[in-house]
Length: 168
Image (cartoon, rainbow, N blue to C red):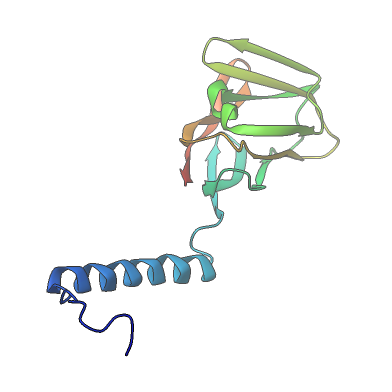
């Protein structure tokens, strides 16, 4: 004689069975997306050309908190840049990053409300490359967007609009 003899068992309802199956399928989809790399960093490259200025901005289009992300600006101008080069960036965009710094470091940074101006000593030649060593803050919940422009005699040229979405 077993201890469960005589106990009544309830038959599983169809809703409970299909709920478990649905949950398992959803779990399988999430695991498959993770294995396929769909939940990691997605790199986007935006570019603009205007008045002999060319800018390419490579950044994370989609990322998750705590991950290292690409962030590189390449500016080209035939004949060089003069004494300095200034980039204008939507300032609050950088709030989603834990930063290790810009390479090269700006000679000067100023902010006028919504815009951060990064001024660099102009390099020799007609190409300037800026890297931002950063990762998404572990506490970041929402992505940000903004605008990045090259400044030429106080005017914005070669402007790109961009977005970084964050996944949970």
